Length: 517
Ligand SMILES: Cc1cc2nc3c(=O)[nH]c(=O)nc-3n(C[C@H](O)[C@H](O)[C@H](O)COP(=O)(O)OP(=O)(O)OC[C@H]3O[C@@H](n4cnc5c(N)ncnc54)[C@H](O)[C@@H]3O)c2cc1C
Ligand SMILES: NC(=O)c1ccc[n+]([C@@H]2O[C@H](COP(=O)([O-])OP(=O)(O)OC[C@H]3O[C@@H](n4cnc5c(N)ncnc54)[C@H](O)[C@@H]3O)[C@@H](O)[C@H]2O)c1
Image (tube, rainbow, N blue to C red; front, side):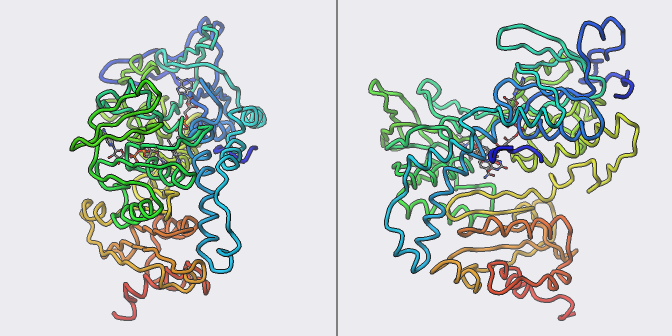
């Protein structure tokens, strides 16, 4: 398995049709004629990204035969144009920053980042955009692969069109899993589409470091790429219509804004370009509010994602092309009336629950296991936190944004918790006051917040911002998922002097409920 991989380590057909949008959709493969003219698998997975691979793996482990269909590279966005290359682009600067932050090491590091070496290292993570390693893994896992673009053709029926235009029809005895992910959305700004902007794909796979780079969008992609390319030597202008990282606690976005500016990036908050043009000399001109013009070598659009459902034959099963697909907690597609399909699943980015590889893979494990259990008639655990449901999607989605400083969060922000009607209290602590942090780096600064449900005395949200905090997050995820009572958390003693002592400080700040009565 290459280091870049985001993937994991036949009973009778069900003749019942799923009714979508009030009409019966398609027919199950019932006649012998059908079965001789088309191949049949227990499960067909469309899209071999990290999520599709994990659905397939779990279904095979559950005793089912699986065909996975991939139109581009096996491994999907995460391996080649998203998580892995972007993190590789960020890592070298993070190490350099860490050395500069510690006296003694600082004096020893006199050079600057070697951009060409960073890009070369990035290329090893994407296996030079060659998926041979991931194809070998599919073979070992017992998953059949079809190369080509798949579309639904009614219930349990899939048509695959190969690169040469040849078509073949495959049928699913039990389930079809749509795992086609998402793609970059290009907003309808004047001239933008014609200006041939870069998206996350071009910026993560670039062979050069543009001298001048504009990034439109202050979300996760925009902030990570602004951090990476500022460190690689670009003059970056980040244009954000609202505050940076608006999905997390405000202090997190503010810390990233401050550091980007300190590192030389221009961060324009509340700014959307009015027009974008690619000029004859290949540069790009952005017309900004109040008559300002910005000329750059490349412009990156990082304004969110759209569903990978445009040419998937959704209309043949009563769903709407181009839309995200709603699902139940076992990841079965819901029709317009909220009824769950008996055979159609939508897993990963495509259901828009959490656009994150780890969360999609978590859904995939639940979905693959649910398919196998349904196929064999085995009992299923569908109550919250059961084996066949993705309960954490609602309560405990962890995310690390690998900016400087890093932002790690899980569960609800204070505003989200309040919005859900919870009686909560936020406890904040300056991470730099923790002994482990002061040893970790000179003049360390950072902030942590825990959001406590005052009725249950459990943590429902946690956010931490600071250099090298990513690995601190999982303790919080366990506390939130486990609904560990604060009284018990006092007995989880963090080692001295580690940054994990932030937990002790937060508990002290909150006060010991049992001691105070
Ligand atoms: C720049 C960037 C950085 C990111 N960094 C992180 C990160 O650090 N951590 C994290 O958790 N998440 C990160 N994400 C999000 C993460 O990439 C996605 O959540 C993840 O890739 C979703 O996986 P998926 O399998 O659902 O979809 P995808 O990875 O998009 O895979 C879908 C697959 O389906 C294929 N496909 C589509 N249509 C068809 C069809 N009709 N027939 C056959 N095949 C088809 C595609 O070719 C693709 O291979 C990042 C995203 C971006 C853009
Ligand atoms: N480290 C990670 O976990 C990681 C890294 C990168 C991406 N991702 C995932 O990928 C997904 C996509 O990231 P993203 O940054 O593209 O989306 P995003 O939703 O995080 O941010 C999009 C930003 O663009 C802005 N925007 C939207 N439309 C706009 C318009 N018309 N004009 C100007 N600004 C506009 C939004 O206000 C928002 O700030 C995210 O959901 C994220 O979870 C994760």
